[in-house]
Image (cartoon, rainbow, N blue to C red; front, side, top):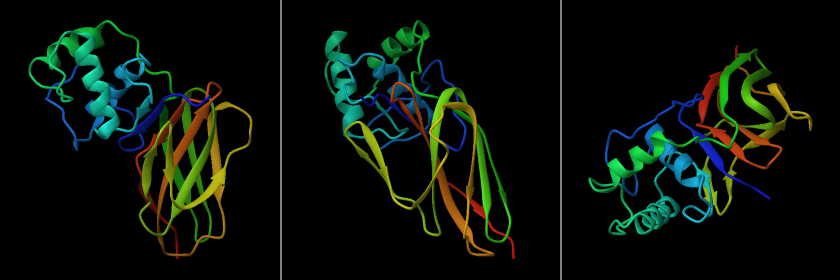
Length: 198
């Protein structure tokens, strides 16, 4: 069973206890991540549980479900009537079943790079990388990512490291970290880059 997906903006998660702006279809940011994490705590509100940092149609449907449950007009956007209700409830919730990825670092030579990171709970991970920007797509309960992959071992740990081999010298690589905990909950960092040496 796959659970919630957490898509982090930059390699680190910015915590948000309250939302400070109205949110709607097409927006992105750490506040969207916080909203999705809150909504995913109730599978009846957000059955797909995707936490990507992007306010897509699944998030819109979850907001509509939340509005219906709370007696607010079901418009699918976090507007002036919905914002204070969500903020009140977010302040009283414990959020985040997916692992939180922190301390992402890279150490690159001319043809290898080591990508390391920590998680707040035991997880296993994959690094996706490519010389062109990575493509990411939400699919039901998962995120599909284009590019080559390098896996950590199959053991669940809170500190992980992956060596990417056979890289091109003096080249910019795009990469992201994808982790899964034992419950199947997924966290993904926002794609970023590293440069190999000459």
